[in-house]
Length: 510
Picture 1 (cartoon, rainbow, N blue to C red):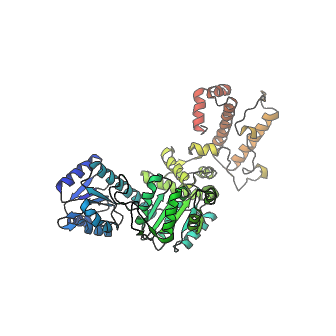
Picture 2: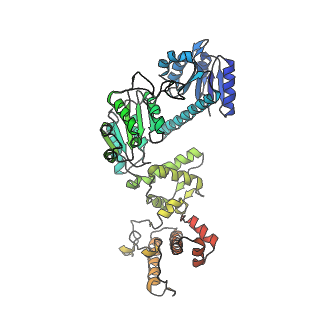
């Protein structure tokens, strides 16, 4: 981690902060004047530059306000914390609004000072990761027609300042769309500020959005700029807008109407120039009917609606997204990227992905860490994927000569009767004969047809595919008849208790 730069002419202040931060595992570098800081910035590299700058406001040989302005010219994203006496605060507020992350009033409580610096570090690191992802990775991936429609809409909307409402299921990539709209807009040089209104407690959300004045409530020791001020000249992304408390919706409507708002505890209107992009996974029309969302705010936000498709609606994109996320995971972990077989990709593409693209990304992280070999095979997929795609058969377009159409893999009957594909409790006795007639003869002929189709397709994992289906059906049926009692199920199957436990884990039947 890069060091925290401390600039103060008071040696005791520097000493106290250095010791407190080092105890927290935070490296530091100290300066006695703004001139030293600016000189160090000239020769600083990307690795030894400041993570955070903590500066006094009044020092011999330079002003903290001038330093703030010059540092922001060089490093606009660097969080700067200003240390100031209470007597300086009122005169400095207007100047600080252009860039200070927060104020640290003197004399300060050391624990609160460290907490503030750590918060600034965390925000700085989050922004670095976001910027790195935006710079190195493609903004969005997708060849499906539904995604091409989204890309065209982004192209048309990016040059407009119109308010956009993005709808779609959780994990479908709504923030990526918002970032793309910002990046390709005339506001691209301004800040992009994102806030999840559902993730912040109701009593803190108002201050988070609009900021607060010093003394506005217990604990408000300093003036704080809200997200609307931070996003001035840029874009504010309001995620999960449907969860915003009703009373705050009125304040939001006012800002959208005339661009003015009041900080919590403030008496002077603050003007902001912000493009708002909202997102939700909820049915806002229904929320309006239920009285949980203001109708006038809905119409103000719903100028242009952009719907993101769920990943199950764009299965053809699973292939490229999987390979992209495997590369990304390997890079983050510093390991060699793993390759995924076509059979594993085919099986993965038949998963429903209730968590959408985010879930696929997490699966790729899991595979990077947990898959035993460099090539990922179907058996290496996570348990939730294996159990959900258990009865899937890979279709083949080129059916071997001599096979009837109904014997192709795509249309081949399952090797198992339908009543065995799901756990059922049946009182009907199973024939004890060897399989010469009736149900067992039909079962064996179906197994033979399925095996023939798979072998003819050229696959090299037929044994594993059919064995996995066979074992899964046996275990699920046995567990169903014993109402989930594993020991009894193992006894009826004629296998050991440890064996059934291991098989349940291997087959993803937990």
